Length: 219
Image (tube, rainbow, N blue to C red; front, side, top):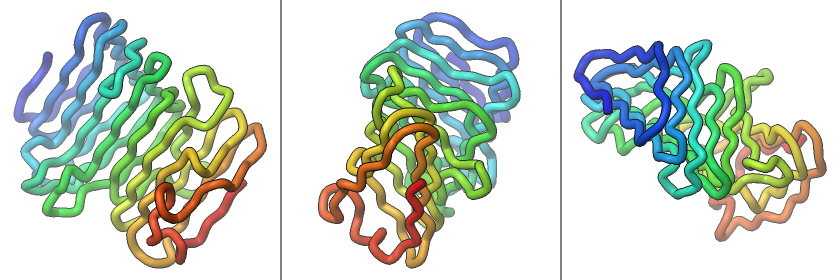
């Protein structure tokens, strides 16, 4: 367990056992974090002040074979405030595992964005909350199930911007995506690198009614 109020840069990596990293300001991973079959929890900007981010820099990765609902949890900001975001690279869980990334945390300042520099989130369940998720121009958040044959179950909540998610492989079913995208005329972009797309969601239990006036691209 690593905790402090200043910024944290993790360069040497970690291997085996429960991993908990907390920083009052920013947290940066420059190395591999592998918890074996244990859980990983990372908390950045716990002081809830300014744009202090969680960043997976070049060489940074997160892995566990844990298959629980708390396999990997990344939280940025706090209820008192903060506009820090989460800049992601490769994250892997065990079969059935959940990756939860929350850059909002009820921040009084509105929270921050979730972006991707490289790599894929390999997990069967993925929960994402931020002002926006992914970006245009080939910068979608890339997701895939652990075995890579179908859509993971993805919950995406964007409070002020759009949602951009690419499935790395396999057929994509829109019913596997639970979307809540606040605001009018936002962009929702869902794609699969290889596979077919089935449009089978509804606007009652899967896609929030606030998505009905958004600009949707399926590719």
